[in-house]
Length: 158
Image 1 (cartoon, helix red, strand yellow):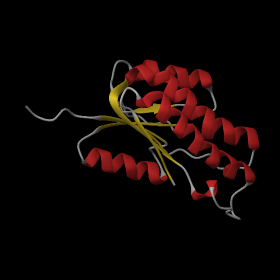
Image 2 (cartoon, rainbow, N blue to C red):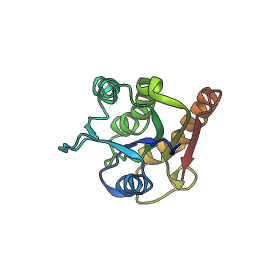
Image 3 (cartoon, rainbow, N blue to C red):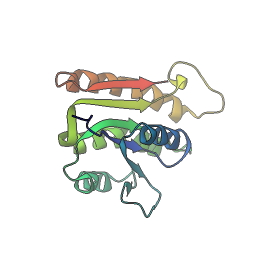
Image 4 (tube, helix red, strand yellow):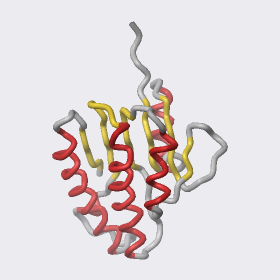
């Protein structure tokens, strides 16, 4: 029997590092669904405002019954508004995981792209960026503990 095709959901998968991650996953044979604020005429793309809890909750309806083998968060907020940074960088990850939890397989890998700004001060980044990057590591540990019992792996890549 052939190997089952894996489904990967890449948040922020249309630009920057997210587009590269999505392409690598496609090249290895995954069905890749991208999620971003951009409108794309593509059945494997979901347009969503990550600052909207309502739109994030509707994402699970758009995914349907597909099983997600890999969940990769590559999105980035690019401004220095404190609350918006936390909303996009942290709340969106939490709400996405909670809303598509039923779609995660027993062996799902969750990868959150973080930054070494969680441990060092980068002069070109605002305080809100540093604070959310440190919080991403804690969020990752939380989900590693709470989802690990079912085989889900959670990692934050700096």
